Length: 275
Image (cartoon, rainbow, N blue to C red; front, side, top):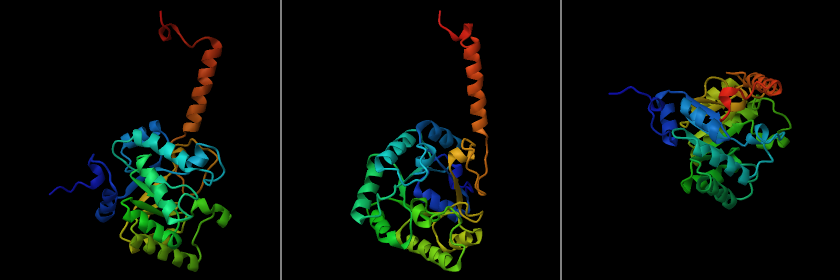
């Protein structure tokens, strides 16, 4: 019998693959992407899950928060990513106020993300208050990833990006919310910026995979914003971020070299022109 783990095969990653990875004890790798080129690169490198995050509001559009993102903008970014992906599971964020008003509107939003954008699943922030909405969307055949802890769409309610659920009452509620989301039918849950010990409790308490960002090593997988881990964004340095490259400096040097070559007349040279 083969001992090969699910993501070692080059088969398409599905929501069931991700659930099986938790069962097999294999960690899940997840990164954000917002365009065709970047999606193709990280998919080709073998990442398991690609999140088309509403963090595009920050890293692509320059907004201070994720709140301004619209459905049409998220659909556009998701379409671009899906066209660049062969293997990874593509999950798209439902943006702020696209699912919080009514269950009917939420189902319509999720349906648009699947039909128009080609997403394989959607992600929604919140616990018990959105559980009935999650259940209805799942019943319609649309996979849902939950998101607990620091939920950026609620930043004006929190008023801060500090670690969440450090106090016992909030920690207990988060654990309850995770179980409620599991019962509602989510296939996985993102845990953002919570104590490592709490993330461990949640991960051990639910059967669905947990994906951490600033939640320690005990989650079933990890996610980072691609622009952050590649060092394209030098102004964002939270404790949980590990930079795997310094592309900001690489690109800065490349552009300066190009400018110098143009100014000096070195570019284009004899081999870089048509005759």
